[in-house]
Every structure is written in C-alpha cells, then in structure tokens.
Image 1 (cartoon, rainbow, N blue to C red):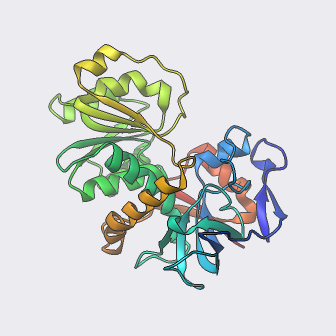
Image 2: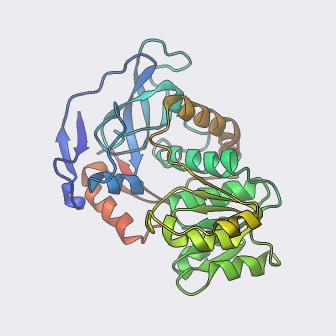
Length: 326
C-alpha cells in the first residue's frame, strides 16, 4: 500500500507518499481500506518531531479515518467485510489501509457520505469526553470554546446547543465568528480586539462560564480561571499557547473550580473504547437526526498532504480539512 511517511522531521515538505508494507489485523482488530482521513494539529507536531505515536501504534500520521472493512482479525464480532465505517486511531490514517481495534470503530452515520465521516471520530470523541464526560456540561450552563471555528470548536458549538447550553466562542476574524454564529454560537468574541473575560461576564450578568474548552494552554491559563463561574470547570485539550503558565490557586479555591487536562491519543484502548461507545450512544443519533453535522472546509488528495498541513498552519480554514485517497 501507499502511506504518508516522515523520513526526517521538518516542514510540510517532510511528508512523503511512499510504498510501505500492508498492515495485518491482530486479535480484536480490523483492517480498513481508507477512503479519507482528516488533518489534526497533532499531525503537525508529529511531522515536526515533537509528538511520537504511542508504543505499538502505526508510525504514519493520522488520528481518524473513514473507509470500508477489508479484513477482520480473530476475536472480532459485530462487524463484517464491506461495512462502511469511521474510526478513532492512534496513528496511520494517512494511508490506503489501516488497522484499528474493533472497539474504536463507528458506523457511518445515516445521511453522511463516506468521505464526510472521516471528519467525525477525533472531534466527537474529544468534545464528548472532555466537555460532557469530564466537565459535565449541563442544560442551561454556559460553555466558552476557544478556537470556535476549528474542527473541535465547530463540533463543540453544535453539541452544546443540542443539550441546551449557551455557547460563547473566540475566533480571530469576523468571517469565522459569523460561521460560528450560523452553527448556533450565542456570544461571539474576536480575541484580537476583545477581552474574552469581560465579554463572557457581560453576556452572563457577571456569572462567567461554567465550562471552558481550551486549546491554548499556558497563554490563556490565568484568564481562563478568571472567566470561570463559581463551580466552573476548565478543560484543557491543547498547548498552542505554551506549556508552562502561572496558576492563581487562590482564585481557583474561591470559585471552587476544577481544571482537567486530557489528550485522546495516548489513552489506553479500554478508555478509548468507552469513549467511542458513549459517542455512538449520545452523538450519533444527533447526527442522524440532522441536529449536528461535520463541518468540512475542503478535501485534498492524500498524496498532497503537505498542502493540507500548510492550510492548518495558516489557520484560514473553518472546520476540518480532509485527505482523500487518490
């Protein structure tokens, strides 16, 4: 088969479409013929040499894919060759074939085509696990989403609105904020021109955000604590703004607030299986019912993955950038 390899870490040009051995499914695994994958910021870090795959995972980038089941390994039940699926991966999505544990498979939701489904696994699992399973967002509460126009952000807006929450978002342009509003966002904050702490407090009569979904890390840590409501929850899922910040523990104590930080890729197989099962139970009906949809910015041939990485680095996209098998 062919896959995107990284002979040497570097810029987008480091991504090479090359011939590699076919993967073979083991106990509890299935082989997928890939139709499409999606680009995540973790893939950019892996390309640069900063985010190695977990032990035993494919060395190729790609944390999600869609395709058809081509082969079933020993001990797998409930799936058949030819099934159209999408999957949460630890790596290997940038390839014509990939092996995945059966517990990380999802059926393609009703109403979506096979390629579109590649935009779902990583964002739905990330948002559901962090916002709902860990931070326990409830109806009537306020969620602040940083990077509202990203793949994660566009899904978080829709899922929060679907359960009856109010949503505030930050983004860097008027156009991105307008697209967040079209998805249901209630409070639109241009982080280049406005203070999100002031804006969220003004929109909530001084109460603040009950849950903050943060992709920035250190840069926003102090302000994220300040924007939290009493009993608020800060869920950190990224480090685009750095890895070391100063935390005002007094402010955290005064608000009886909590901070969680979780990545998805390195979680044990059992945890991923549980998250995927929860997503299938709670999110898939919303997609099938037309209440939630993947937002796809564009499709790019997988052998031109370098262009897709440049798109993400320039941050001109809204939603997900897909890589389709040529």
